[in-house]
Length: 339
Image: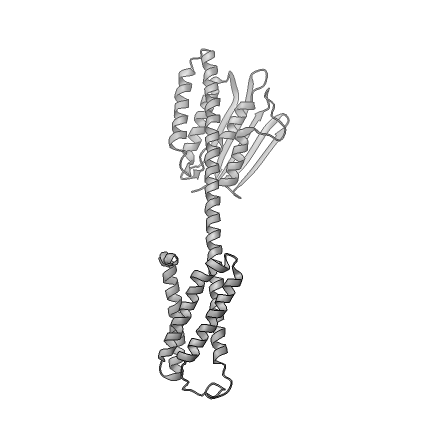
């Protein structure tokens, strides 16, 4: 019965509203009659009881459960019953001459007025309860939607990590096969990258500088495995102090560039530019389309995940352009940054 009153905020709101109503009516009544009759307070108590009987019990358990016939029968019986009790036991004596009808008139509007007030309370209770249920449903739907977004982001992030790890291990494997002296440095760089991914990316936002350091380390790791890296360029410009960004939001674009940016002659051409200005990040990535041809309208799992993460994390806060020009794959992204 008292589950409705568990929320203290709702209780305070209801007490405040009813207090205002009682005070307003009492002042009007006192102004007209120079007193507040006892039956008036009893009638108000009955009205409040009728309202909450309807609001707490009848609407949720009958009307909202599609038991409309039973609901309206009970409502009519209650309203008429309360009106009869009012007329028989709680009549407020008139001590002023503003009514048109005399006390002994064969027709009196008192019963009709009482019924109107009772039904008005019923309809107000219906409206309030329906609004409350709609608000609760809206809140639940938003919570479910938010949880689905969180779950999806976690899923996408977990997809990114193995994808990155596999690519990096392949890079180190290539160095090991070539017996390159750069293999130990590559392992240390990979360790730094993994440390960042394990301990920093669980946050909703990360400092932009740390994310840019991560990208620099990734480039260093990839350069170690590439035989011809003269055309592998990374340029970062602009002030990034105090800016924040969602973690790992750019790396999939860069991973794809290294995946497809080497041709059959072993030449790798990748140009990545990042520029920060006025709380906006401008990202440009271009690579040649090498021996691993991308399927039409498909940019790989990493790019697909990044598109989905951008839609979830930066709705209406980014501009993305992806195109193929003269056998080169190009990405342009403008992203609003957090301060």
